[in-house]
Length: 131
Length: 274
Image (cartoon, rainbow over all chains, first blue to last red; front, top):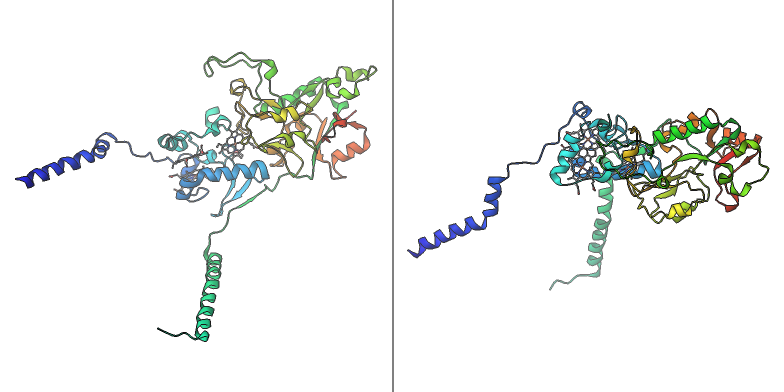
């Protein structure tokens, strides 16, 4: 008699304690967006670093690039994978945006999801937006 | 209890020492054999270089139109805002009216007595009384702005160019106070509404940073001469001041030239052949 009561109570307790998880299971349907490889990036096989490294470290790579370009006057980057890049965020064919041509569907989709808003675009321009 | 002789203790200690030394040697060997290739940064092959970049402006080749073209070419290609540009109301609604005192300039015209106040003369050559002298950042050898900058946003590059790292500028404007030539402008507002046609090759600036001429560092890196040189019809020559054979040095050798406010000791790298 007592045993049944305790088990029932425990069940209620477990359900109540885990309620935030149940809530999320029911309401949140949006998974992390898949950044779309569009434009040149679709045909091109390689990024500057490999995919997971890029995902985790593109901010520090960009930081390294801008220091190199502005302060050391070095603009050419020969990556470990053998490809050369013109170190630039948005100017020229070989820049981030020159290859990832659709900023909205690539950089922004990911940043919006992660709630990051780089201030770079106050100055740097998206060539697609200007036209 | 086990008894250890001195001899056996030393043996063990010796082997342990070898082990300690072996670990770094092993990792060194390992990194050498299958470590990833390193990324390399370098200059473009066609990049122009100099020991100290300088500019010579031949005033005999200047006239109103040339001076205007020079400013135009520089400002258009660097996305320098023009406060006389009519703002696109749709894109930038409710833009405040402009204040001409807050204008941005990289290279512009100045009268002789403002450009060279220490050489003012009642009987100045008639021509100079009306001529607009193009003035810009002098890329001084002893640049006071570089010393004034608390964040090293303004710095002197090895090749003599006094450059700004906009990423570091905090907008304190010490450099503007330090510059005796008024070569620097502060962005009191977002410049974008006043850029008629944004050039994608160069970033704009944002509210709150100082800006000035960069001697077209982005063009020298691609083996091209600065925009002002190309627009000047031969009036402006840019080259290496420390190379006696360079075009600028030949010009300086064959002509009398002056610099702005020489007495201040900033050693400008911009010369005016008069």
